[in-house]
Length: 207
Image (cartoon, rainbow, N blue to C red):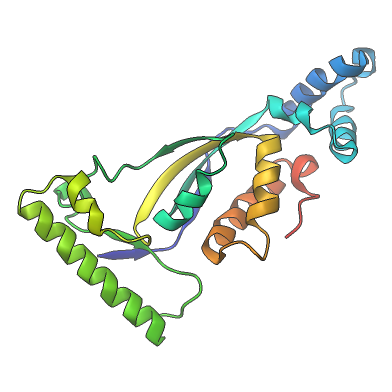
């Protein structure tokens, strides 16, 4: 059994200046102001349309992110239906094979300390789940049958692709203090990456 922390990786190769130029080119069609495009006008233009609420323009660019999280978090991710998802499948992945080192991987909860009673009880429950899963596989159960004993803490990998407007919506919901702590942990990590890559688009999103 393995315990790991969640992680994220931005898969889209982002040239911030080129992203902004593409958005400006699309947005200026609305006003027929293409003649105002200069070598350095994109940043100001994109900032202006976001401030004015004209966010349909930023739907023209998308970003893909690989998210390693637990199953509970993934259930919340896929509720963002405007986005596209590809996810590690417990129907087809057989964790009882050498490819997975004959073991399950779980995501460490951010709200419990390893020396606390809650963490120890959680860890013990996972051991029971792993033993049951591997025994079912050994008995001849298929992965899609054996997965019925797998908990929310099971690690999964998700590729999430969304346009910039949907990412802004995602962050406003999922970085909120009202969001689930593990969902918020992942969302803040992605937002911080985006703020570095495209500050004009995401710097006004606070948490």
